[in-house]
Length: 227
Figure 1: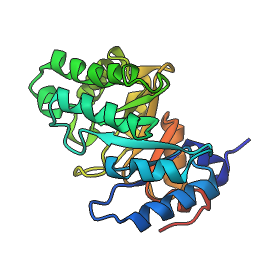
Figure 2: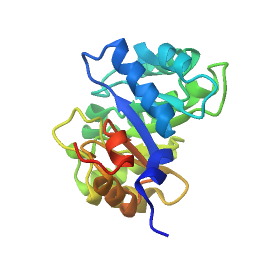
Figure 3: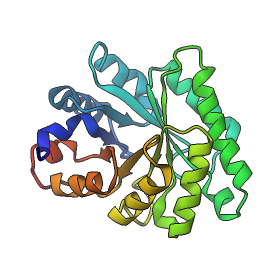
């Protein structure tokens, strides 16, 4: 049976990462997430406690970002961000890979950076059921680099690999998602994020192998509207 727009809600991280966002924006985001039963809301770390309060006792989880948007924070900083986010109520972590280290072919450092975040979810003292997604920022990578980045993330224990921050020069592409899925197999999730504006865009990503969508246009996607 063909998937319908409303059926996609459980695969969407309803996202608001605008740098000038206000509390009112997060309130609206959470209200929309509750109405449409999205998988999560994705917000900046400062809004995690508020979003967690608004979504308490619902099925909607709270996702936040670590090392965002450049991935250039130190490993120790990313580990602290992770523990702090979980303490504040985050249930999923979208971390940015150390792109500088990756481009320098310091692959051991890239892996240890990711593993530090994964390990921090297990030592936070709250729960061990935290999902870690690694943003590899595909717009900066060639195909062989996408493969390598996915292999590293998988080896480091990540639950998902994710295409984009939405702050880079390019968005998610069907081609990148397809490569990511082929690389990680079925044991690791693939999140397509960046530039996904409507149901048709989201469906193309799912067909390519994504099983999670990150979008600020979640409502438009599930109601089959176009911005």
